[in-house]
Length: 455
Image (tube, helix red, strand yellow):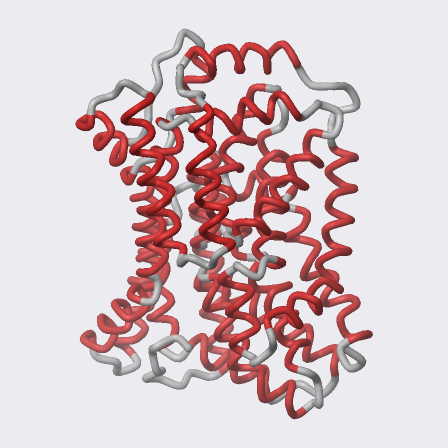
């Protein structure tokens, strides 16, 4: 549960009005003025601090709530730092260039988006992390899409869809384990149950990506030019597969993500010192500033200029602001009053499902945090499902269908900011094509009620 107790008890109407105003403010700045999301989030913090002071909450309490909110996301912050290092080390060791080169050799052009979606989904299940999948194979695919003159929006949508299918279905996934644990359901029973909605969403998404894929093969010559330039970097070696294999093995043996990323990055760095010809000073600089190649083919230079701790600072700063913002929403009582209001108005299975999904989506939109959307909604609705005689696995399924997959669709969320930064495609650009993420909650809301009581 979010480690903050409300110090004010606003009415539901007052909370909803604030909710609408805050979402309107954020949407206007990001969509209308095209500012970075940091600006409206910071303005929202100012507004909530002023609101709290007017309601008699001391600034010290408000400040402590912001700190507590930010503290809840520090594990993600450290992972983001390591992912920045992972990308840069995988670049200089040749791992990502090798994945891109292999992809050009294996993937044709007629079903390009569908194949990107399917392969990303398989890798996502193997790694158990949507962000790691996006930052590794996703970066490779977005580079391939650029080289093949494919739509960056649809390619990114396919990557995000596949990565979050893996995040939902993998027994190694943090969110999958969290959703099953928070409501007391066996992990594999949970995975079996969510397949009732996840598999149909996967099939529908795959069909849509097939339909959107080019009728004719995309430019093969362009791909050949990229492959030639990739080989000219002298980064591609058989050893380039080792960091990727280590990461897969680490997830299979359930090594914590921080350690797994550290092991893979360290091995990639060691291999780079042997194969790249760079000095250790250059390699450490790449850890911080990312890798910048200097080939004669400018598109490959742009493609491989990735990674580094510095590249993650935008994401990290927004995560801290967004979670501090979430802390204020709790201490002022705005979010708790809306959550608890749901509990008193639920009478049938349909309304319970819709309310659960709406709450998970609302927490994602308002706070921008994937784990909180699962934890808060799970804690809020456990009693409701028990009272209605519904099994806990019905709740855990809805948490995944409307909580896990919505976060990458919110421009100011942790996943949204990270993915937009890593892939170079804005959230609102790929959002219409993240079919799996859009379809999953719809299937839950439309059809979940017909099987909840029986399953």
